[in-house]
Length: 312
Image 1 (cartoon, one colour):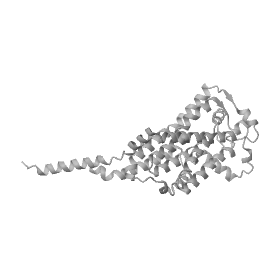
Image 2 (tube, rainbow, N blue to C red; image 1 turned 180 degrees about the horizontal axis):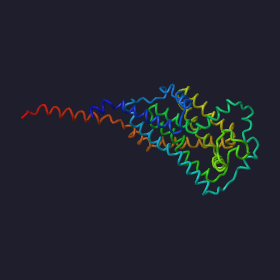
Image 3 (cartoon, rainbow, N blue to C red; image 1 turned 180 degrees about the vertical axis):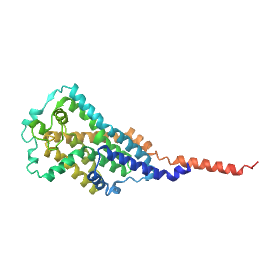
Image 4 (spheres, rainbow, N blue to C red; image 1 turned 135 degrees about the vertical axis):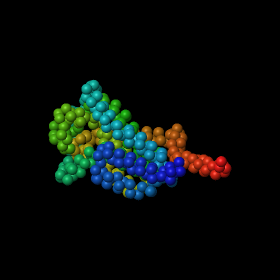
């Protein structure tokens, strides 16, 4: 146990590094994604909770691990949901023709200027936006040493959104703008006709928009102006990309913003409840600090007893 006390912090730091590496692998982050994360972490000390890393890391690592495991299995689960929708659901509403007939709803005004470099930028933003806008905020919350904040970002940005958005997706058939209008997919996804059909649905509300909007709403509460600037800039790019790339309709985007607002308010209600406050206090005390001290005391007592015992 003496060795545990000596190497506790190096061990916790190593576990943190391994966990962050695993998170990066969920969506195969490249250097550009890591650059966004590093930019978001600048100035984190302005929002740090006044608690030692030694006390925070055990609870923080547990929280981050739980959210990682949920997210790691979220992709395969979502694929199964889509397949189930394709084979089992006859949606009550088909909004394709209606949305296509609404003036300005296809967001054509976002595509007057489409240089190749801008299309590549928005394509990158959109492809990584779903995971990056969520994890950058959760990881940054981790480095503020605030378990409650980690939970708030995780719930508002993903854990509440997935189950609450499914009733919309299971009752409303609305497909992506390019698919409905019969134009090329600007993301250049190599999809079969069946894959195009299933990939291009579940549009109302826009979940790319809702996750990005939740990140913006929560980031605006932080003290660091730099962090606010990074998140607002990046997440606004995600929202713009959904229109620029002919993925979502304008109404999808506004619905996604409204949905994000409701998820943030629900997450606020949960984390500010009395039962969650009691849970957080107990959870944050997973510091393991007393265990080594007790063990060391027992070891010293045993050594003293041994020395005091006369040899035969």
